[in-house]
Length: 133
Image 1: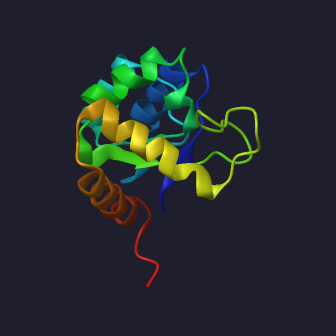
Image 2 (image 1 turned 90 degrees about the vertical axis):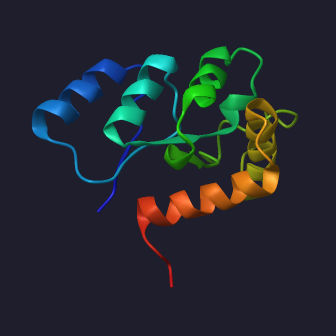
C-alpha cells in the first residue's frame, strides 16, 4: 500500500523516521508543503510530491521552487478539499473541479505543455496508487 503523509512543518522529522524505519515502496507527500530541500530528498528517495492549490498562492515561492526541481515522474496534484482552494478562487471551498487551476499553474511555472503534464500526472497517479480498472 501507498503511504500518504501530510507532514506540515515536520519535514525533517518525517524524513528521518522514513529513513530510520524504512519507507514503503510508494510514499506520497500529500499537500506538499516543503521547499527545494524536501523536493531533492523526494527525488533521490523516489517519493511523490502532491501539489495542491497552495502552489498558486502569492506567498508560495518555496512550493514553486520545489516544483521547478521536482522530477516529472514524482509529481501529483490534488485538491486537499475543502481547503487550500487555488487562486483565483482562494477563500471558497475547494473541490475536485478546482484541480485544473492548479495543473494550469504547474504547466505555466514549469513550461511543460498542459497535455503532457496531464498525461504525466495520470501515469504517476497509477504508479503511486495502482490502477482503478
